[in-house]
Length: 397
Ligand code: PHB
Image 1 (cartoon, rainbow, N blue to C red):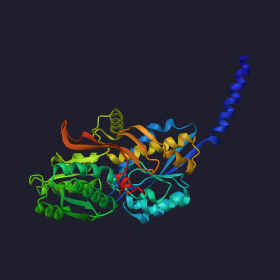
Image 2: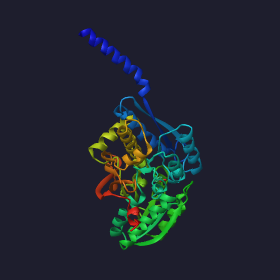
Image 3: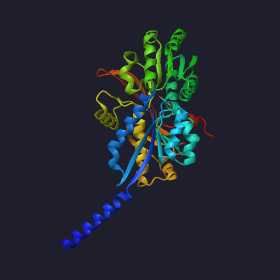
Image 4: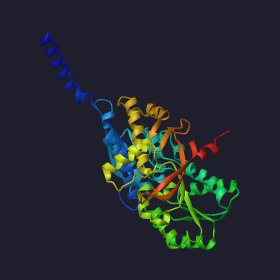
C-alpha cells in the first residue's frame, strides 16, 4: 500500500514538474511612466507604488501566473513619444494590458491604439475628463479634476467673496478652471481674473505679483503635483501673499504628500480637496504608509500618484485572478466595470460601469504641523462616493 502511494506520489510530482513550465502564464503589462525630465518626480511616484504592490502581492496570483511589468520612459507630457512607445509595447512586446501614465496628453494620444489593438488601459494618474470617451478599452483609478475642484469651489463660495484663478495651461488645468468657475459663481462668488500659466518651465513670480496686486480674498490654483507645485508655493510665500491676507486653495495636487515637507511653513493653512492624504488614519492607509516607508525610507511619504499606481495594480491583479491568468480584453473590461475595493488607502473605491471612471470620496484638508511635520489633515468628507461631476452634468438626456 505504502509503496503504491509512493509511486503514485512520485508520478504525480513528475507530472506536475512537467506541467509547470507549460502551464506557467506570464501576463505582460506595459508600464509607461516618466523617468526623465522635469516630470521625473511624478513618474517616480507611479514606479514606487506599482513596484511595492508587485513585491507584496505577487504571491496572491494563481499558481504559475506571473506579471511582467515592462517599464518605458515617456520623458514627460510628450504625446509623440508616448505614441511610439505604446506602439512598440503593443506590437513588439505584445503586452496584454497598458498602465502607468502621469500625463493626460499622452493618454489621449494613445487612446486610438488601445481600441485598434484591443489592449485594456488603466490610468494610474492621467486625469483629463474626456480621455475615457476616446476608447472603450480605457478605464481609470485615479481621479478627475472636477471631482476635487467642484466640491472645493462650492465650499470656497461660502467662505470667500473674490477669487483669482491661476491654472496650468493644459487640459487638467483648463478643467480645474472650468470646475472652479462654475461652482464658485453658482455659490455667489466673484471671479477677479483667471490666468493660464505655461506648462513648460513656468516662472511663477510675475503671475503671483499680479495676483497680489489684484487683492483677491483667495487664490485658487492648479498646477501639476511635484516640483511645479512646490515652486508655486515658494512664490506665494516669497511675495508675501499669505501676509497680505490672500488664502491659497486648490486640489490636493498643490500640497502633494511627497513634496509637502519641502514646501516650508508657508504651506500651513493651505486648504485643499482631494481623495488621498498620507496623514489619513484609515487602517488600510496606515498599513500602506508603513509598508511604503519600510521599502523606501522613513522620511518618504507616498503621494496620491503612488496610491493611484497601487490601486491600478490591485485592479489588474483582480482581473488576472478572475481569468486565472488568461487575459481576454473584452472579459477584462467587463471585470473592470465591476471592480470595487473597500481597502484602498483612500477609502472605498469603485469603477463606474457606465463611464469606466473612478468613484471615490473627496476630503477637505488643511495643511497643519503634526508632530513637527507638515501634513494634509483631513477635516471632513466633503463628498461621499462621488462620480465624475463633469460626466454627470453632461449626461445625454
Ligand atoms: C494629468 O496630466 O492628467 C495630470 C498631471 C499632473 C497632475 C494632475 C493631472 O497633478
